[in-house]
Image 1 (cartoon, helix red, strand yellow):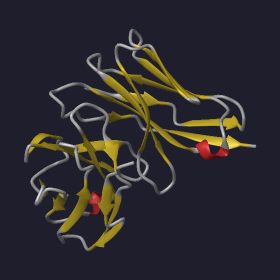
Image 2 (cartoon, chains in turn blue, cyan):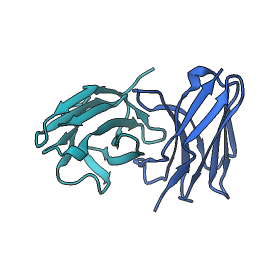
Image 3 (cartoon, chains in turn brown, red):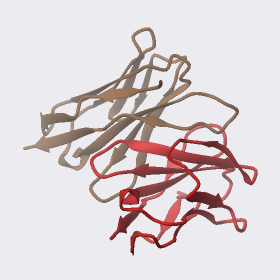
Image 4 (cartoon, helix red, strand yellow):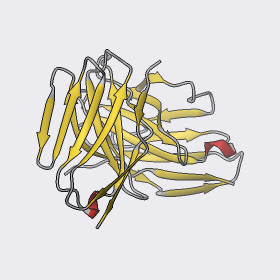
Length: 113
Length: 112
């Protein structure tokens, strides 16, 4: 079945770049997403990429997609303490508009001074 | 920016009781979803809803669960007879049909 895997924890120094990795199994995925969850809060959509793209950049965020290897990464440049959160990778197929999202377990990003 | 709103933020219920979780999706969205996240586990899909009917449901969404869009703005999840294992954070999401899905802040459901 469909599955999404992420490493569980990443620790970086403030000002460095963070790279969070994700692998997925569903080759029919059309969209891949990154959501951010701060403690006690909901899921905030950070960015997403369509499967026919290799890269998407949005300010400090860069998403890279290797469709052949089914590998997705999120790079956060100049990481700040406010970036400390859990980051979820998610994928969806396409079935006429209503698509369930399959989530990874989340990567906890800790930013230290 | 428009957002999905969920109420209540925290619901405490005795086991066996019925509970209704409420969501107001983004106003021009047509597709609605419920997900849940048991503490420390992955976010799991429960159900999707379009055109006043369920379009897909997971194996978690058994007969004790139901969804409804009682009016033009609300989208509800009812759990008929709650069990201890229903304790989780429940997220509502909505989309236009194109991507992506936007999530609410969730309702933390605690079953005693």
